[in-house]
Image (cartoon, rainbow, N blue to C red; front, side):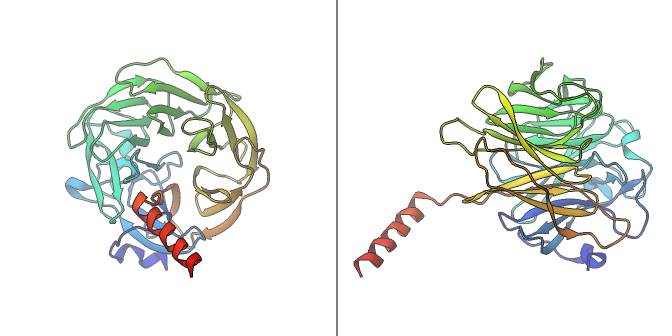
Length: 348
């Protein structure tokens, strides 16, 4: 089925569905060349919905390094209106874009809207190395990017934009929570997750959040708000690629403490959806989408193993990162209507 996916015309994406960053058309082996990117939509049960192709040639091209397993991490914009992802301004089939300077192959930040539209207009001209991830508050706000050459601030979206170095350490996932910037790191670099405060625009000293062994690798993480008594996001789920596990951390508003883990073999990326019964976590490795339900709540110690719910069946393709548009909260008007209907039903 996926062999024909690139021909499908993009439709609107359903809030609450998963969008997975996929590389490769299946026609050629994945290597260091510039490779086509697709945004595949799946239901929370693992059913394939559609594939949205990202432009592969010309002024709007955004490709990936086909075999770069640390690239393709996705995030949700702060206002929930966009899914944010990254790549390179190089036509598919070209030599390794991450080896080019940013002037030769601009680093691109793409955004996907709920209507299925893809915007790859933001191109950065001074951020070299391998580009892993990006985060933004909205479709027009400043951007932060995580790359092998460091964490950087991008003041303006659009073509030909430049960046400012925040931290020179090799970065993986970058994410904003409550306006605070967080970043994760790979091997040899400590801490594994750190924060930089609210809206840094210049070199900033990081504050450690999670410190593990130097061999551990936090490639991706995701936040949730599970406690009514702690302001903002209070729970973090993080992929430890070295141990093949997803770690849970709980915040009391000042410090983060470990709250268990579950097994997800060769996991690279994680996202989640908060529901009435807890958190449904979704994890990808190169070929599989996994699910794990954490019903232990705020501060609860989770354990177990993830279950496979979807698998890529086409050779020479690979999953990378994933994210989901949040399901909107009911408005005051809708809640009022629901209350009226309940009252009417009771009167009857």
